[in-house]
Image (cartoon, rainbow, N blue to C red; front, side, top):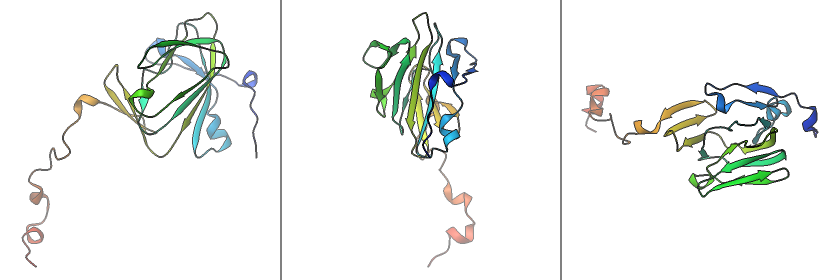
Length: 168
């Protein structure tokens, strides 16, 4: 059944971050309310002098912002650009789709955040060298990356001797 949401009727809830510059307001998880399986969407309200999520890109998701009201500065790998009411901004997968908003105005910037979901996503944060595995919110420092075979030496010791010494 179709669901109609009007942004003026949404009850924004504050989302406080450990770093206050990342505090923002969000609608209830609209995708969950309607039972969406294939994409996630929220209406967010970014107060003046606040940033959206840390600068990031997705390895396995595309993202789309529609600016409902207000304005903000958009950071991408190429530059900083002002986005305004009625602008639609698409972010492709990978480093070229990296993005972050900053509300440099004097009124809230309200925007629709629409993301594809195809299983697990890996989000990378170039500024802080972190990796986040979604939807689990498992965050790791990328500097801990190791070779695929790291720690796999002496594999025979992990198997019963009668199995690895069996000759057929």
